Image: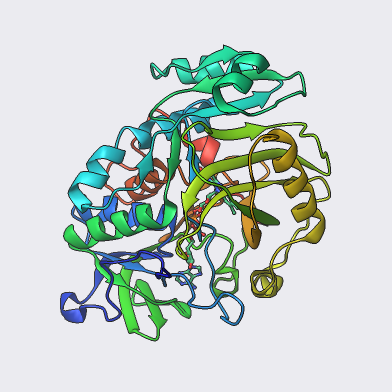
Length: 397
Ligand SMILES: Cc1cc2nc3c(=O)[nH]c(=O)nc-3n(C[C@H](O)[C@H](O)[C@H](O)COP(=O)(O)OP(=O)(O)OC[C@H]3O[C@@H](n4cnc5c(N)ncnc54)[C@H](O)[C@@H]3O)c2cc1C
């Protein structure tokens, strides 16, 4: 049975009776929706503005999001301590977000990584009491059916590692923002101008006036501002292969895969998609990364991904799951917004203008803490975290 992506709790007209607001959050994706809820719950008069997913990706003029999917890996073991920190802080709040919103989004089915510095991943996660530990390829084959032959170190992490449904997490954050008093506006912003010491944010909804703005527009939105962030917009493709869920396959990140036209592949084990099919999703980083300019993004989202990346990902899936009866595949384009530091940008870039942007392909699981950090910028006390704000400093072109 076909059903639309899950996105309740939004309205398409702002309640302008509240007049001037404290903060307008532009972008209602993974980070923006989290920031909107933390701002509203902290008592700021907040607008959370952004569209849902386009009905038809092939014809829409956007903007598009980087979470148009049913599964994103969540785990504490990570490539850097900063990513472990923001993941752990977010994951501990999942139950509260799900309970209060009434929207579940987390499946703690476990995680495996094959990476050259696997012991470091274990050490980073240990800071939070995670059960992450080193294992060998025989254990992985016996326990999960995954055949890993690249000789790299292997880490396994149990619950709460697993996957989240990013659409449902955005819906949950949006619902909590609404319950916290935010004006939730289901539309794209078309313009932002300074007016009377604040900002006038305009779109098909009319105008919202706010003292300050938080920009969380992911790969999009560059055309609205006279400043440009130092980011790369990296084209990515995903392959979703039909496969029944036998409950054994965990989430996976693996470097040096058998078909090495991509590196750092990942997958989310079989989950149900809106058309009712159950599919495993694989993605990865093509060695010759395709970088997109802002004006090229919409065309990329109109397509179905890069044929070389898709062929390589499909080969890797078959090699790593030699006993799995894979069915038909569907493919999709996506975009990762990357920074030179590998960490997101969260900070002020101009008077009254802050950003919470650039997830570097890793922000879904950690979006609640990243959004919270963005929200703290607007509090009297400012940045409220033991994490060093310098790690998140936005860089302009
Ligand atoms: C294929 C793929 C797989 C991934 N896998 C994982 C994973 O397994 N685990 C993980 O943790 N992370 C993963 N990520 C990364 C994660 O999805 C992103 O880091 C995250 O979505 C970034 O959140 P964001 O809020 O910055 O951007 P988005 O989620 O893209 O949200 C930005 C929002 O801004 C809106 N917007 C844009 N322009 C405007 C405008 N003018 N007005 C109003 N709104 C606007 C967009 O519509 C969108 O909703 C993956 C990413 C991709 C592409």
